Image (cartoon, rainbow, N blue to C red; front, side, top):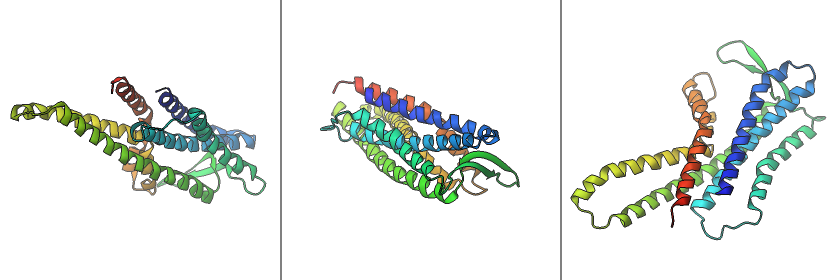
Length: 250
């Protein structure tokens, strides 16, 4: 349980860092020393990659917690996860900054506003090919990994529900079946909420960004913002569910 809490806190910290640097991206574009804008852009890129990495770690930990429940002890488990969650994005950003004499990847960027001729200056990645080749490939691999684990975990939850239902109500008659319909509906709702929480927690909803390009997908963009804005809340709810299952004796 301590590991789960630490992983949730790390993901929340990465999300907080991402939102903070995003709020500073316009301010950094107005500051005169050019290195300030470069620093803000690099920090925002680092926090974005950290979010993706910690989402993958959430999925990996959930797999070890619910599916591979035996022989899962790892020495210095949390230290290794922290090195991966914060270290891998740091290496990528450090290498990108290290080749600034060859190519400057971070700095002032003009963002176009949809359906208008207006532009907005922010501190972000200046090279589109670098942005798409790195960020999208990195997220795509994590998206596929997390989606596979989500499907496995959802199937495992359904199997556990079926086993619990069949073992707890042996020989139920027609009256018991009638009374059990509201219970089945309630269990289905709880299972759906758990799966929805896992979907947001592991960043599956970030896949809506693939469908949000262009000028007509405002519905998808609004869904992207709403679902990902509730990621922190659903993280707390999932943590409560994990603590509930942790307190139930086997």
